[in-house]
Length: 449
Image (cartoon, rainbow, N blue to C red; front, top):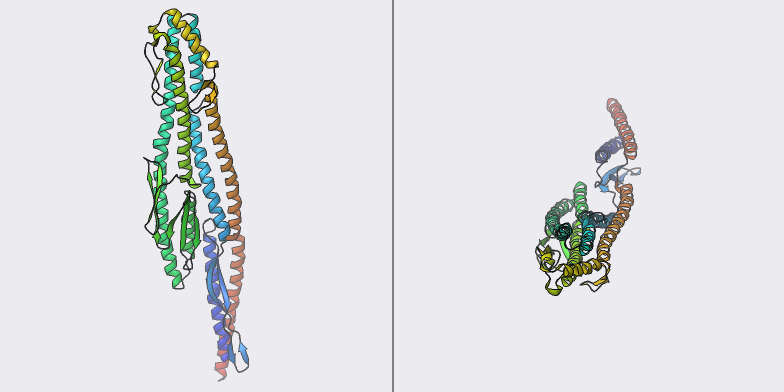
């Protein structure tokens, strides 16, 4: 009777174990398309044996825990790669916008307006009394000034309005994700301290961490209580953004274009030079810096153009052609052709026309033709765009490779889960058959009493 009772208890334990294993496989199948989900497995351990008069008798197995299959080393590599891809993708997208604003293939844009400007002066010097020649000079001068100013205004709007608005949105999203990670930390620690697995909460936290990696570069470590500590670097500063149940935050000033930090312990880290090396936030700040440099070069071009053209035309009491100091305020002076005699105007027109073939010194100390300086700006924008696009493509390919590795460890294989279900079903049926047979044997023993 004792042996039969032990057999019945072991079979019952087997039924319970297989129920958990079937439920686990079903849970895996239901989450097969969720890339943040890590495949779960019910781990069984051998029950302690029982001593009877004939020796030690095995008592089967029990489900000890349900574990997740994760490789944190691959996951951390994936986070870093995702952050880098997002960084270069953001830069590439905004340089595409810059290239659209500064579109200049010689048939349109500033180069075309500059060419028409030189040509009009060349035509004027041949016949300064021609009203059509004078009208052409006025029109081309106005067109050039407008083209330069409009390009400046469009770029400036990107650097001072559109992109800062995106930065503010990013900062708001980052702070929200930091708060979410803290909530998951608390829930995971609370559950696991009571011996309850928190695998699904860990999956949700992993998704939040993955979303965060697309916004900023960071590193994280898992503590013994299951909580994550999250930190990031900005230049020489290391900022702790999450520490167990405490979250820090980011603050952005569109006035200074700097990001400041409140650490998880409440201390502040003053804005530095925004040397954030990854994520869309870093890409946005880098894009603002890039556009600011393009604006500086456009200002250099316009200021030198104003200076050189005015210097030639104001000789012998002539009027300035342009007003303003740079690309932000360049304008045409009205009636600038009406202050000199025809011979004087012809001489000035020839000198200004010849300026297109002369090398001049720009504010940055470089010496080149005006057309060459414009080409250098276009080349710099193109090179920056090509570099960002190349880097983005590299990290996208790396991400694909790392995601495949991560999914090979943590992803759900439907074929594998179906095999596990069939195996568990067979074990369940076998255990049920044992229980049925033991019942018949017990009925026989009882009827013999």
